[in-house]
Length: 207
Ligand SMILES: Nc1nc2c(ncn2[C@@H]2O[C@H](COP(=O)(O)OP(=O)(O)OP(=O)(O)O)[C@@H](O)[C@H]2O)c(=O)[nH]1
Ligand SMILES: [Zn+2]
Image 1 (cartoon, protein in one colour):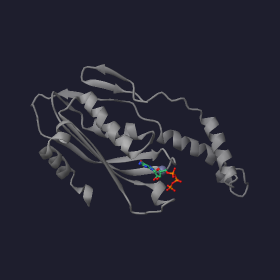
Image 2: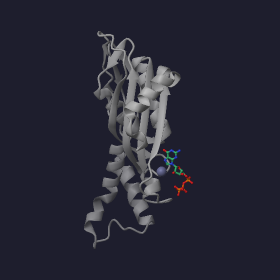
Image 3: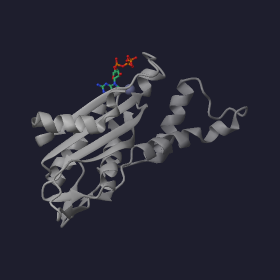
């Protein structure tokens, strides 16, 4: 389930988990589901529906295919020892219960040790683990674990705030509700001062 990884100095290639995709089979199944729900993709009165099963299959394949990327890190030459936080990283994933989107923002911080990470890689880690059927709790934990393992920092903090369309558009129909999750590691978890600094820097979580 976890990404396969090969180490190069300062770089860790993050590969998506191996997935075999059969878009034809997925499109056929999507058409069958539409028919079972009373929507006929072949109804001549709605010709644009004909390609909808294929679009649906392609859309899910796109949402559920993680990008590969290099987890580029640099020597911490300046011995920078304060917190690094990238806030408001846009996040979109698909809940594993309904395969409906949950959408929000991630805030990702770390306390450097020997190495610092290319800032964009924090957004890429979020997107990578979001591109699979997820729970918000697991996504938050996987991002924190990945940074902990591949950067070996003194601490990691991840907060995600998201709206789950499975509970805003359907079901409980609680529009405007949002869910906040966090995963803290190392000094950011253990030291009350560090934890407070992280939450203060994230700031707007409790708006
Ligand atoms: N903990 C957690 N729950 C989630 C997440 N995404 C969706 N869910 C919940 O998964 C649960 C699935 O519950 P079920 O009772 O099996 O499904 P359901 O009958 O469609 O339930 P309702 O959504 O309440 O209509 C729901 O309560 C969802 O809100 C998530 O990221 N984390
Ligand atoms: Zn759901």
